[in-house]
Image (cartoon, rainbow over all chains, first blue to last red; front, side, top):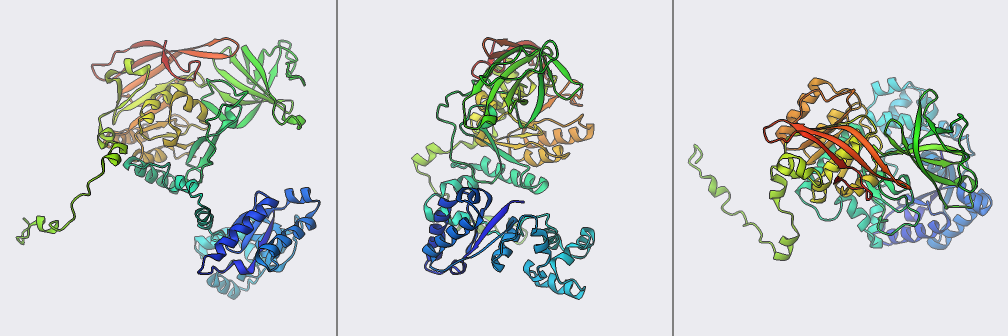
Amino acid sequence: MEQLLAIWSEPLCVEQPDGSTLRDTLVLLDALSALCPFTEVVRLGLFVLPLRGPSRFFGGDDAVLRAVKQIVLDVVGTAPLLGVGEGLFCAELASRHEVIVPLGASDVFRRAQPLSVLGRKDLTTTCQRLGLHTLGAFADLEPARVAERFNKHATSLHRVARGELAEMEGQRDVRLARRLAQLRGEDDLFEEQTGFFGQRGAGDDRAEAAAHRVRRRLGADAIVVANLCGGRGPEDRATLVPWGSPLSNARDLAPWPGQLLAPSPATTLAHPVPVQLRDVDDRPVVMGARGSLSAEPSGIIFSSPLRREIIWHAGPWPLAERWWLRKRHRAHVQMVLATGEALLVVAEASRWWLVGIYD
Amino acid sequence: MTPSGYSYEHMFAFSPPRPSLSPELLATLRPVSLAKSRTLPLGEPWRALVPGGGLRRGSTVVVEAPLGLGGLSLALSLLSESSTLGHWAAVVGVDDPGVVAMAELGVDLRRVLFVPRPRGAWAESAADLLDGVDLLLVRPPSRPAHGTVRRLMDRVRERGTVLIALSEPRTPWPLPADLFFSVTQAEWVVSSRLDARYLTVRVSGRGAAVQSGEHVVVVPNRRGRAEAS
């Protein structure tokens, strides 16, 4: 789990009727985003940001904590409570105690907490009667026993107590991000989410209802929609996002130099599969630093017994991108196999990956 | 009249009349008749090869091809024309859809729902989506069961959706389809890169009007689209 810095600002957690709370939240979010672009507002008064990146950049956790404290002081006027822990649940608890939970110690920290931190009175009372007073004692119950005795909500809390879930249900204010976007006048992003994509018809409503049904059956990320963005290879250009999440505004309209030309593979693997290329003497084919192949590839090996003959290949077309990272040297190779399939493979980090099948 | 002598007309006597729409607004609306018309249009090259030039609502289309020999591209190319005209499509069971290839084929991605990994519930997910989309492309993970397929096809007929099933010769679709595409040969034309693929497709089906026969089509061509050879 990722180490998060939780920032708890007391004055911002109760919403004032004049709307100043939301405005201040927005100002603080922007200020913190300048420090770390991955800053999130979880709910009113609570912000989190991943600590690792900023800590490396600013030279240590303490430097980040100091900078964050100063920013909140400047914007809100009172110092925040800061805490560091793994996962949102632990991070928020740490901020209440104003402690930094070192990496790996989150488990101990979480288990020592009283049951009341779960925020469920009925659960706390029942457990106390059973002689369970800490999260650790609750976590030690067998999941099956908990499911027998309590409802679904308690089962999910049990998973939080065991450290299997990083955050509690209801810990996030899901409406807040949208309200902030409205305040900023950037509601379009979310219009797409609710209104699917602008103009609506009866067909759009039916499709939305159908998507809801599938989501209830298979879970939130089972149904996805596609979006195209800029990029060189087909594996970079396609983004599949769970249905209902806001789509990025970046559209694939601009010409992109060095883009792999059409046709694109009808199957683009989300997780590329490692493959090996061999020459006629069954030696591995590698790509040199200047983007040339060590030998003509004549065979491709998927998993060890499965080898296919290559009858034609084109490329490699090196992608001159992020040249400052040596291992980011990538190149595309198209090939046709003796059995008739056409494949797209990529050389990266001196290995070959199957990224597409022209199915 | 009800048995109590009460006329139903009275119940609606005070309901407001339908609001009239402004001409500018009317111009932006899609006609309802499009959604209800009995066939969904097909693009090139299929228009000339399929009877009626379209896919009849409520019918099942089976595309059979060995894995990797163009079956998926062919099936996706059947979606493109309808998708451009505003129909919704869903793709169930295609693990890693090539979204860029779909866009090149002319599919409007804003109206496509994907269920890439239905985890053993492909038929249930397909049934869930039937009411919501006009075209449903499914690739069953293994040989589909007879009963499951029959129930699905019955629902498709009832709902007026078009079901496009993608199968392999090893695991054929167990029931006869209204329209059957079978890829018998696939050949790539190459230059300095992959240029085009010539597919030999046998089109057959039920009904008198089907011109059964083998056709050579290009899917995809140099621009990633489908065309007649």
